[in-house]
Image (cartoon, rainbow, N blue to C red):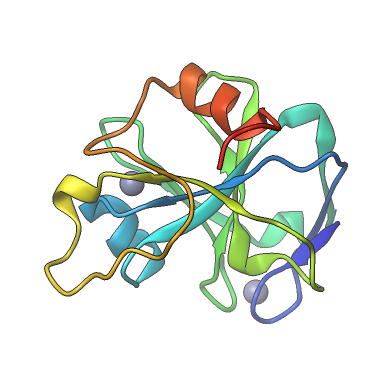
Amino acid sequence: MKGSCLCGAIGFEIDGPYPKLYQCHCSLCRKQGGSVSNTGLIVAANKFRWLSGESMISTWTRETGFRSYFCSRCGAPLPNPLRDTGTIWVPSGLIDGDEPLEIGAQLYIGSKAPWDRLPPGGLQFETAPALTELIALLHSRSTR
Ligand SMILES: [Zn+2]
Ligand SMILES: [Zn+2]
């Protein structure tokens, strides 16, 4: 499946099979995405490739390692490497077309905004499981 930023300058492609999505309600993800939560998917780095606009990617990294990549023209959040896991985090709203994706996990519901209503679907976590466990969960075929 393919994805692109708001202005269309930056494009990318992901090879299937596709993992489930997760939604993170933590305060960092809310600021990064500008909304109630961040919905993303985590894919193996070798299943991801940029198609266009790579030179327009701007980056910001918090001291703790939290990363934000964004289009230097339109400001849309962009895929970026997830620490040293060999995976790429992809903001799901960038995906083009009607891919049959589903939510596998709700993270940091313990720190969600008071007005945030959790959507149905996915296992719920007060914080988050270890990254390797989360990746295994989202790539398994049998949750829900
Ligand atoms: Zn853009
Ligand atoms: Zn988060």
